[in-house]
Amino acid sequence: MAGGVIVASDGPAATDHGGRLTFSVIITSLVAASGGLIFGYDVGISGGVSSMEPFLRRFFPGVLRRMAEARPGNEYCVYDSQALTAFTSSLYVAGLVASLVASRVTRAVGGQAVMVMGGALFFAGGAVTGAAVNIAMLIVGRMLLGFGVGFTNQAAPLFLAEMAPPRWRGSLTAGFQFFLAVGVVIATVTNYFASRVPWGWRLSLGLAGAPAVVIFLGALCLTDTPSSLVMRGDTARARAALLRVRGRAADVEAELKGIVRSVEIARQGEDGAFRRMFRRMAVRREYRPYLVFAVAIPMFFQLTGVIVISFFSPLVFRTIGFGSNAALMGNVILGAVNLGCLMLSTLVIDRFGRKVLFMIGGVVMIIAQVGVAWIMGAQVGKNGSAAMARPYAVAVVVFTCLHTAGFGWSWGPLGWVVPGEIFPVDIRSAGQAMNVSIGLGLTFVQTQSFLAMLCRFRFATFAYYAAWVAVMTVFVAVFLPETKGVPLESMPTVWARHWYWKRFAPEQAKSPDAPTTTTTTTAG
Image 1 (cartoon, rainbow, N blue to C red):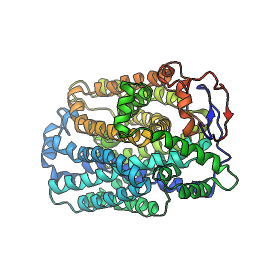
Image 2 (cartoon, rainbow, N blue to C red):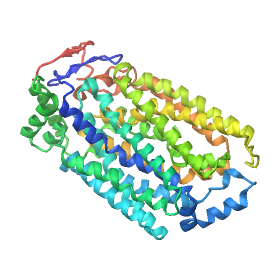
Image 3 (cartoon, rainbow, N blue to C red):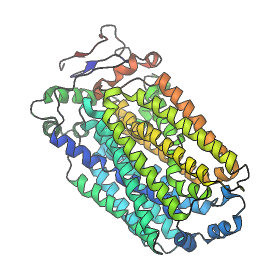
């Protein structure tokens, strides 16, 4: 491949055509990564608003009545309301649809325009939910927010992966999760102070417009990625974009030729990206690894349990005996822990690689979930009727923070980094759309069912998530090749040398003429 490299699957090294970490690429990456703010703000705001009594009194009075009737009854079932969970989960149905549409739109107009659309839609959703006077208006606003999340979640990680030099791609792409974590912290702090006034829920929901403005205005100032511009036939602008983000000392022509060659290969198929992915999996099989991970990564990301913990931690903390303000403060602490561990992960992700972070994070999360399940089973009881002593309640918060730390170290950033870098250019947009849509679909299922699970499974809910973390940690250890530092156009060679996936790789990728060590090739 023009401008490419050949790498081994265990600890690959790679050329980046002399690309440096320029001021332009840093600013571009920061602006694109700020797309995570809107998703993070919603993740942090939903659970806190759902625990505010003025909000419940206006929209879900049945939950308040159940709270009054349940004490000292079954604490696990206090918040089991399908209408209340629909408030949270409706966003993700809309996001699922939007992410699939965004794949085609991204190929047509580029990721920059899609991020602008996402910011505008999220701003509109924040305005509608902040001004809501009934449940219908609340749900419509949440769906507008979902359209914004679906567009930005599909476009921003791909934008980051395509703009970043290979040597720093992991850290720069993890910026999306970093801003997501910042959004969570901002939202939980907003909830904590807004809960002190009767109309505070309106403030919390309406302020969603602030991060939307950040991504909207920032995206207007960006240029599209070289890959996107070449896909749309604008090679001159692609060259100019590469010069701007790589610097004049870089071998821009070699990288551009590699991108052009990848796009030319992609255009050999006349069918759409989704159809091509499934057809080649069934007939020629070389896309089977990509399809497996397009499904596995978002599925496992959701089954870490961190999403529902992020949404409903204030309700869980109230279940174990904390008051409203203390429960909201616990949520603030979780957000801060996640942000701190994510910052640490960003510093080492391109030094130690992806698999080491996955392994450490998995072990930490298993220990934490088992700890929560054991304490709640022993102290709250099977029926949820026993009062939990304060030291044990604090221990639950500590274990929850430990789980959040493990996630922030591993699946938090890597759940966005890995899907953004593993797909070939011809199905990259479709692959990311699958990743986002499956993730949002599972988020809908989990947010809609978590409170019912807590009511019926009780403390075993947390053991359920611990079992899934064990499965996904083994899966990653066995089947995920290390992709640290590999240029995107050379990614197929990593899969071709993996002990299992090499059986599905095309013959040219497995050619015996290809050396096993890093070799820079010239444009052909």
